Amino acid sequence: MKNHIRVIITLGILVLIYPPVFLHAQVEITGDLAVTASALDRDSHVNTNFRGDSPFDLTRLRLFVRTQATENIGVYAEIFLDNEAPVRMNGAYLYIRDIIQDRLDLKVGMLPAPFGNYGLRSTYFNLNPFIGVPALWHYKTGLRTDQYVTNEDLIDESGKVLTNRWGAALGYDACWDIGVEALFFWSGFELSGAVTAGTMGVPQARFNNGYQVVVKASVLPTDGVRFGASFAQGPYMVPSTNSGAYLARGIGLPDPNADAPEDQTTFGLHGEWLFGHWQWFGEAVQVDYDAPYVFEKKLTIHTAYLEGRWDFMPGLYLAGRYDLWRYDQIAPFASGMGGIFSWGNNFNRIESALGWRINRQTLLKLDFQYWDYLDESDLRLAALQLHLAF
Picture 1 (cartoon, rainbow, N blue to C red):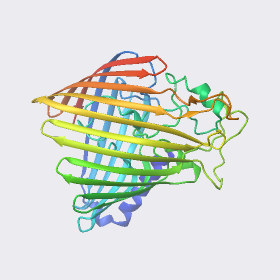
Picture 2 (cartoon, one colour):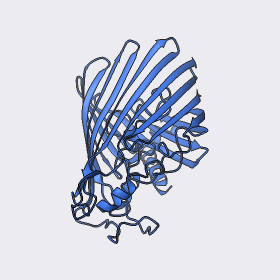
Picture 3 (spheres, rainbow, N blue to C red):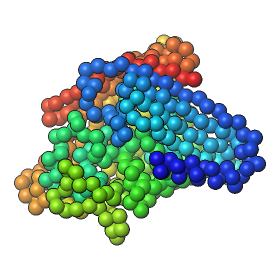
């Protein structure tokens, strides 16, 4: 809540600095409501966000607030309500366009993820053909961010994927980060750079006195085609006085003033191809976590997804997404002895959806998720969702 207040104050100061610009601006409020019935393994936490909500919850409401002060200056905010979580502000930012002709834009505030190509797609009605989110943008690892960990800790946690809700995520779309992003455009080329208070997968890292740097470059060789690469780095550990049931083995808490903070370093490729009645999107990412008390000193994950959508009849579509998730291997003991094991539970996931656009404001989705964990466990989730825009 404190960070939401900071965002509101920041945007308020900007409004006060330029009162003539905002005095006569009109405020536009839109939104969408999702009502979902789910079945099968609906009690698992594999889709649950840090605050306890999930895309498969019974009711979810988003309000979009927009005011366009001038042709080039606007303020955008997103407010979120879910039957399983408190009301929260997902995002609020100032967008200044065409600072240098039509070449340079600026965003300031609580921003959509500046990494990869999912952040803006997740925001708008009907751009995500599924109920679920790519694993890259929500799934929790067994890596705690408020305690230093050892090899033994990670091996112990690797099998608790069905109940895990608090480990580090690689990316986290459910809570935007506070920062500033500059976007540059030039003849089929896009370049952006951002500085944010938290990291991609750990929004609460904003409390560790560090900053994340994100750089993204994309090429648009022709209409409907975009591909590029992103890089992000920032300290991911969160200062804490938590001394609950899970403690690293006597090592202690992270030091926010350490000279060499533990970084999350992320490199990714993204692409999209839109043609005719087809849409294809994908991302592939490598994430490295600095881990000073792990024998290998670094923890690595590789993940990728590819999703496609086919509008096979007016108002009807079929969609499928395949996620792949692989942990690197580490020794089971901090001494480096004892062979090697994956420091998490590897999996493949398939999500499929049938959508019916009943009218411009109403979308019905039938969705199925299958999680195939390579330790021979699996999960299945089916859901029917009515999505209303207003």
